[in-house]
Image (tube, rainbow, N blue to C red):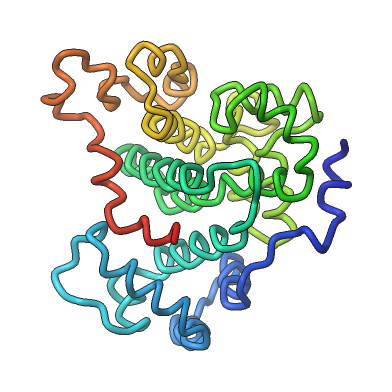
Amino acid sequence: MELKSLLDQPNKLPTIPKVAQQLIESFSSEDVSVDEISRQLATDPALSAKLLRLANSAYFHLSRTIGTVDDALRMLGFVMVRNLVLGNSVTAAFRNVKGIDLQQFWRYNLYAACASRWLASRSGVNADLVFTVGLMHGIGQMHLHAAAPEAMVSIDKKLHVLDTDRATLELQTLGFHYGDVAAALARIWNFPEPIILGLQGVPMPLAAPEFSDAAAWVHLGAWRARTEVLQLNDDAALACYPAEVAKRLHVKSDWAPVHAGADKDSAEDSMPPLSEMTEGLEAMLN
């Protein structure tokens, strides 16, 4: 199978709402009009309602209720509003994909985005970019199953879709992996290059043609998400910990509860529970 043939199927390419497409175009705009974005969002009542539900979730810990899209833009900032809309739109675009436990997969995706953002923000890097890559990094896997379901059946039988070695198996079998597919879709949608590079590098950040910090942060956050949704025990989680990626990012292992051993509950620098970190954002999955 060739990557090009996978994408040369217009009827199988995911479609997203017009307002989401306009938000994607805003990535490359140096003069984004918040008023114009607000008006665009207002043209999609269902999406606006979902945005307000997300904005008022426990995730943001806001002191007052957000009642309008304008309020959301002012309180959360344009980048976060854009991320929420894109995340919801991408999830909705793959509602009928077979061969994957969609609820589990998107929960993993959300956990990975929030975990990687938490890690990146503690290191003083662009956490918004990392969050965007985290939210979008599952689209390659989704498109593989939507556009080439027969080819994925044999791969799925060998390894779970969230297995640590999944990208390696795809590369050996197909000649490319889900990160390559995600990057190709992002290029079709005219995403900026840093996001495209990030998406391509997430599965194997140290082997990517060009190293992306965002990809590495998401790779690390994805490990934490994977251990949670697959309910890996401590030994299994430690065995697949991406130590070399963490080393490249200069991250000590004390952020992960599993490394704290008996003192995991009292580790001051440990990442909070993922269910707590994502509280309220699960609405994007519905």
